[in-house]
Amino acid sequence: MIIAIDGPAAAGKGTLARRLAEAYGFALLDTGLLYRAVGMKVVAADGDLDDEEGAARAARALRPDELSNPALRSDAAAQAASKVAAIAPVRAALLDFQRTFAHQPPSPAKGAILDGRDIATTVCPDAEIKLFVTASAEIRAKRRYKELLDRGLSAIYARVLEDLEERDARDKARAVSPLVAAPDALVIDTSAMDADRVFATAVDFIKSRNVGERP
Ligand code: CDP
Image 1 (cartoon, rainbow, N blue to C red):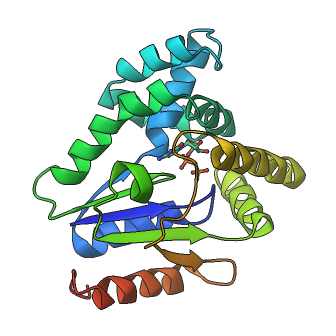
Image 2 (image 1 turned 120 degrees about the vertical axis):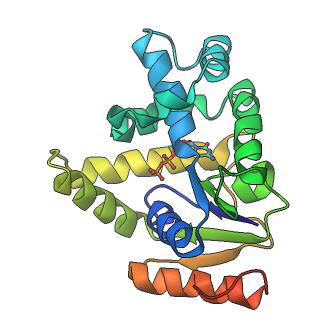
């Protein structure tokens, strides 16, 4: 069984994905990390983020051990990610890894959860469960701002909001696999919901589709 979770930046996809993975015993892949790692690889090599060939080479050379670098969680990595994510050969290079993880999750997982932007539309259009998690830009920026402060980093709210809106605009406007809800996805607007309610909403939906037990 595959659960696809898509949505804009800082909407709560990661939190929901982790809770569902734990509840159902599924393996989890945060696909944003793949794009972040490719972006940072290009930056580290003093490369140009608009250089399609260089970015595609970085994507093809990506190794799983490069996904655990803590620097990938920075906003600089997020911005670099959304630039290389618009390059078709980069997306193509990362497709096999994501599909293999979805269809043959590491043992003993009984299923896979992937979160990203195009999981339900491109990577796993066959996913049994498709969730599109969203929230207003202001709420998402507030959550990301708090997360940065909690991690001991300095941040300016207005800058966080601006970065997030710039990234969303790029993700929605790109020609290849743009950010959009699949027609058969459950849209969960988390603006006025806490993490428990988001989780309960997802579990009810999974149950209603008769593909999973309530954990
Ligand atoms: O954590 P947050 O939602 O802020 O970002 P992320 O999920 O780590 O994704 C970082 C960037 O990677 C996004 O802004 C997208 O441009 C890109 N991405 C993508 O294009 N497709 C995916 N499946 C996942 C991420």
